[in-house]
Image (tube, rainbow, N blue to C red; front, side, top):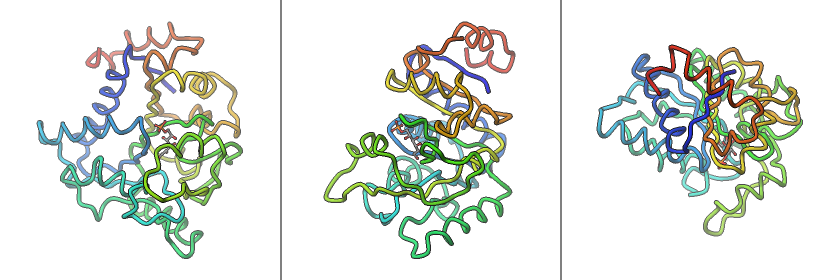
Length: 261
Ligand code: F6R
């Protein structure tokens, strides 16, 4: 795991977007794993700007989102499909047929989960998975006690996650209590992970995820087992990390990061 602390939220977001853009330029048919939520909105804003201003090309990209609420159709403004269309897919030149989210309306949820895993395999796996982190330490919707080897499946949302996300719900739709999420095992199989966290409300969980013991109670700790995972935080989200000086020293001295100083 490498940890990068940027002074501001803007710099943390911009580094994340640059790493995605660089991967896409290097491999135009990149298989990109995507996340939703407040943190990612500004990442998508920057990617859209790169498409508009610099011609960043999404035409061959393939995407797999981490999760979707059970019971919400794509046209519901609270669904993650709607979020992705609004923040990214409808604003860049991606082929919508190459964008994948679990179908929260599937009659047979178990079959849908198996099918989602198969689609990822058909694309030869995920090259780069973008991740946020919830207050429970979830990645995707892998709530506490998610098995390290779990696969895409329906998962009950914790009361804390319901409290975190309910304020985002608009209109009449009550927030579903279940979601389909890629499993921790599914996430660990992607070739590269980038986790982005900003703001002081993430400081405690980031400290546990990065420096705490690996535990199924905090799914993000599983990323310590991933051979190519970068955690990008702003100063606030990184404020409770014990080894900040070490992480900053590596960022300053590692040749790969020179271009981002
Ligand atoms: C959503 C997802 C979640 C969020 C996490 C953080 O697709 O995978 O794990 O990344 O809940 O959400 P925000 O950014 O709203 O704090």
